[in-house]
Length: 81
Image 1 (cartoon, rainbow, N blue to C red):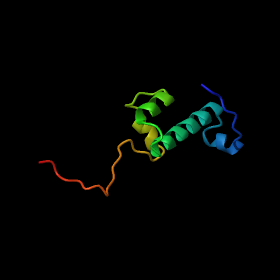
Image 2 (image 1 turned 180 degrees about the vertical axis):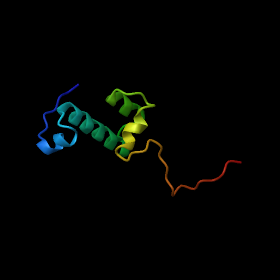
Image 3 (image 1 turned 120 degrees about the vertical axis):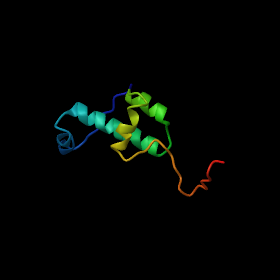
Image 4 (image 1 turned 90 degrees about the vertical axis):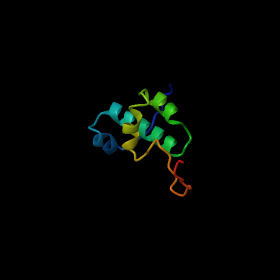
């Protein structure tokens, strides 16, 4: 694992209770969620990177408005026969 030194406003850390560890965790979750949103990584890879089960992942991604299930409303959905 790599450690990155990122300068963030003190206020950002304050928003998550003043805990730098929690702020770092939140930023990691946000980055992973964005990669899932962009289809750069799979949900399985996201769960692995976050150290959670695939069952716990949807709850984390939901905090960032990311859904694991891809649905394209423009697709021609035909009923099963």
